[in-house]
Image (tube, rainbow over all chains, first blue to last red; front, side, top):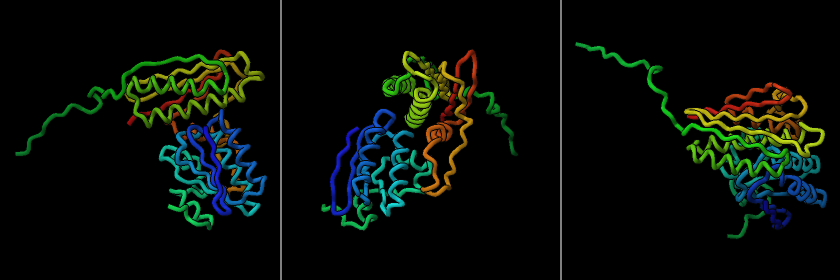
Amino acid sequence: MQIKESKQGEVLILTISEHLDSATAAVFESRLLGLVDRGERKIVVDCGSLEYVNSAGLKVFLLAAKRLEPLGGKLVLCALAPSVLMIFEMIGFTRIMKIVPSLDDALKALGGEAAPA
Amino acid sequence: MLQTRTCTPRHRLPQPSLMHEGSITVRLPAELREIERLNRLIRQFGELHEVPSRALYAVNLALDEVMTNVVRHAFEDAKDQEVVAQVIARATEVITEVSDSGRAFDPLAVPPPNLDASLAERPLGGLGIHLVRSLMDGVEYRRADGKNVLTLRKRIR
């Protein structure tokens, strides 16, 4: 798995790719929760290049969303491939997390500007 | 005049074979890093036997969840322990069996998560077995000869 980080205004964007599974979830967890600890409150995870996720990876998203909520923060996921989105639906995360089709939608959802074309 | 034609009842027709039948058995060390290797082998097996890609994806993800559970929870010390995974492609279903010699544990005894709970109330546990149940058409657990045996069935079509 690869993780890239960028910032657009107040919004922190993490781009993850390939496999988020039992072997890689711990690295992603410490990175994502580290951002929350550092004070980031508006976080987008761009899943456009994410090919595979299992429950270990799903748990990281749940953990981060749970931690951000009482802090007044928000986690938004975007650009999930159909096979990955199906898993989020199956586990009921589409009901408790903001999941949108594109990065632009994610930035709008967090009240920021859309990415320059 | 209306004529009645006799048709062969459906159940007498031979079942169309959707996949090439066959099986693969993989013995592997009880380690998380082995799961990706297992998934690669099962993908190759599935492609060879023309298992539809959606079913293959479901089988591989379910197998990943079961293996992760075994490696994390079945043994006091997973060192030198092994897990046996068998995948059988039949005409219209894929059967996956995973066995280990760890402590007796029935993952189906874990209550399903409440999908209507709010974010704050959603527990962190139980996600993996919920996925397995949702992805498969049947899941059975048995304890036999000192082993945990979990059988997963995925129908095709």
